[in-house]
Amino acid sequence: MLIFPAIDMRNGRCVRLFRGDYDQETVYGDSPSDQAVVWEKEGAPLIHLVDLDGAKAGHPVNLDPIRKICEKVSIPCELGGGIRTEKDAEQVFSLGISRVILGTAACEDPDLLRSFLRNFGPEKIVAGIDARDGMVALRGWLETSSVRALDLAEKMAELGVRRIIFTDIATDGAFTGPSIGPTSELCRTVPQCRIIASGGVASDADAGKLAALKLPNLEGVIVGKALYDGRTTYRALTEAAGRA
Image (cartoon, rainbow, N blue to C red; front, top):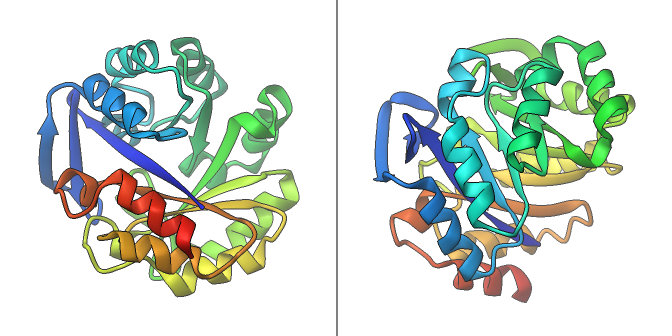
């Protein structure tokens, strides 16, 4: 199981939110690109980027920080937040992004998702499913839909999605441990998809718990706040994931 460090951007800075609350923000640095270099040196195979301003605005916003990150590192970067049109995707691909994450757009417009998969290929498109109490959350977690996360995952898999990032909002940035039950259920619901878990990892032991599930399609876990707060290290996380 792989460990993917996260860089969340707001107003051009590296930040983290508590359970997706824009009013509960912690700033960790003014240069997301410098942080990306750190994660590359630590051995990360990929960096997970989130444009928080973009998620709220409905289109990519932190374009300059994104460009600088892609220029400074040689490992691939994926990006979520505000990508709602093919033009948005083309814009961030031109900056060096390797794959884009569709959340709100994928949920609300299956035809758009089909078009993304057809025109860019399934390896460049990741479906992001963010859930609050099992229901899909939209627009940077500002709204909760009436769609069950598991139902959406099945629908996406039928459309041709091959990779899903699953976030349980209740665990994000809360240090409560990963969402073991819902993550396991999602993996079993769509075995044809690679699943990346996100949220709740507070220690290397938490990474070990996820890896110990031995779910063949659990590709990795995204870790943010635990790394920034010094609760664990990238090396400790990878070692724990490898031991399970």
